[in-house]
Length: 113
Length: 115
Image (tube, rainbow over all chains, first blue to last red; front, side):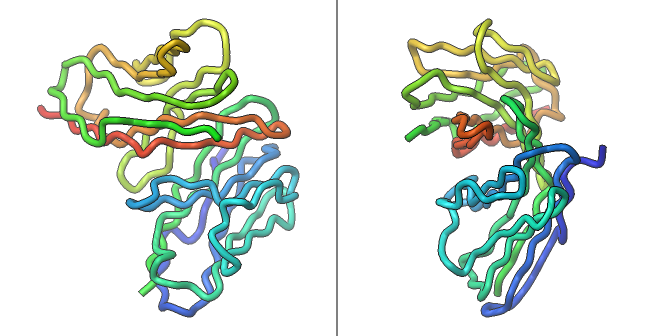
């Protein structure tokens, strides 16, 4: 299995631009999680999906952030418009049914100038 | 709400020395506990997990952790550290919600290994 795949690995954009981060979970996993990692706030859960349905988006910082999961093999996290304070590493993770562990992707390092 | 405290931000040990990374959690029920490792520029990799049963759990790469309910702790240990263990280590507590495991992470401990 290729594991969780994220793209792009690095993204540099200017303030005000739209940014889309992509994730392909491990095949057969029912849960998908989006996290953000910064020096100041550490690892934060933004949102998670169960069977493509958003379950908890209480960690999404504001309306500029949105996430979708149109099918079991693909999810996007969109920031529109982006701001410098959104600069962080964004991780996607997936989990199978039951008390299993979450498998993390390599992350997308986002820099907003 | 659950929380995790990792009191040591940085730890330096000599190669071959023993290691203990501290983790304290706060959660009202029996917790699900995890240790993850993150190498520079990489995602998080699971080292070990505790759900129930034996309070001493073995993980990959020679790591182990002990769950102590009375101390609300889940410390990570390794008897002999290798230079390749230099990385950042995260403790996490999981809350089951509808089958998914919502994780809350500690702030991490950066491990440096001196040769």
